[in-house]
Length: 302
Image (tube, rainbow, N blue to C red; front, side):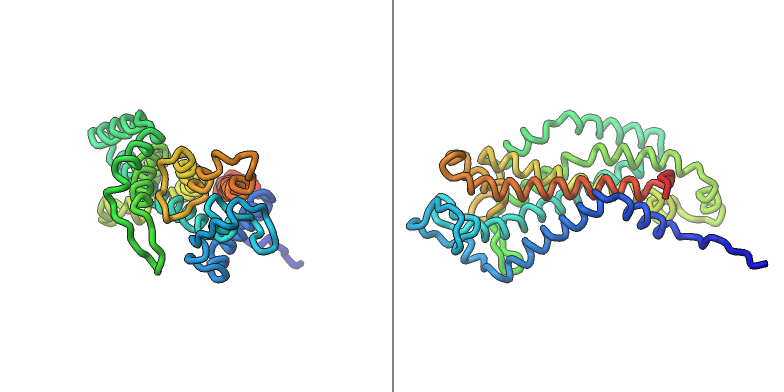
């Protein structure tokens, strides 16, 4: 008699199957991929010089065949500006999250693994950082420090020094919740039998942290990092709208909205297109993060 058994799936295959069943997450993934293609592929069609070209004779024009998104207050093409502005907005989000993930993971890992005095000091420092208002610090730092950082060029593009200030401030003020998550994971995992076995064979504490415990804590870190990108993009948009964000000539979706503040009714193209792109990006990342949370949770049904 033939014995039919259901083939076993690896944890990665199970996670992929759970993710594919989450329709909104799949939609968010494709939407985010389309936005990346838009901001990266668009630079192959429009040059940065064209995006920054000023022609006051066509200022505040409505969308047309020549300028599909219209023109801004000094006659620059909004379509090209959203392409290059999107590159900076996404770069700020990814860079800031990289800083926050590194800090939050290290603090949470050492606090949860070592415990005792080390945990007490690190967690009290984390709680103190939670009391610092991020938006206020961003505004103050952008106003007084941005002009002191020189503009720089990367891959042929000129970036305002304020980009560095914003990335560092967002990264340094958004790691605390992740540190708490990582700490809780380490507190539960360090008591598992495989950690005891690693100690018995002479594995050092650093080896246990980075080779055994941390890989088993990646699921919540990935989810938190995904959602952190959206929060960083929104934070940059907030302060740019208030006039304290990334300085010219560097364009972002946020400082494009600053130009639209005085023309909300007379020139709606100034805020509709960059605002809509911010909305799509944040929604796609949130959908993706929600799907990753369910996919990486082993308790979720297939």
